[in-house]
Length: 216
Image 1 (cartoon, rainbow, N blue to C red):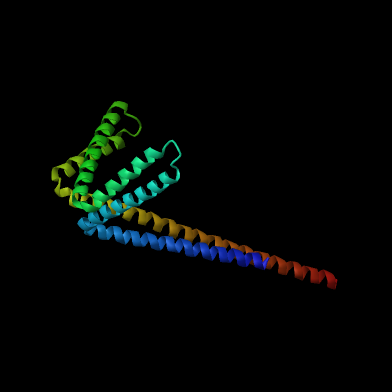
Image 2 (cartoon, rainbow, N blue to C red):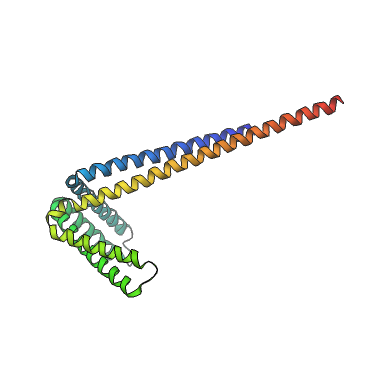
């Protein structure tokens, strides 16, 4: 009984430590997101370099997998995909500013087309979420127009701002998960301690009752 309880306490301590590290990682991501929002230009270049290296790494891994499966029917398709990733990563690392301009243009067009389709769909369907879809469509169109109006100057901060916001919200979610899980573990620990105390009290009462019966 005592051994099981000590093992449970060790498991709870390990879980508590793990969720604490998760919350700490979330705090680091939140700080990185805030710094990126302040220095959006640096965040843009950093995100482009990260994207380029990820493409290079993905291309190398894809090429190795293609060589390992060279007898399959998808060998040449895997080689082409790996070559495209390698070429794209190389171009992004060589010309991060031009790559940021191209990605900013692509993002603006994506916002515009998505906003138009969402706005038109909300006007045609008029479902239960009509107002929300209408606002989302109008916001997408407005964001796309604002980005295109400042392009290519907007490429200096748009990618970095989106990247920093993603870090910020991911960090906040990790902090919420870690702190919430530690709070739940604390409640479980309190309940377990109360249950153990009740068990000890019941055992003491039974021993007293047995002693009284033996004396009688």
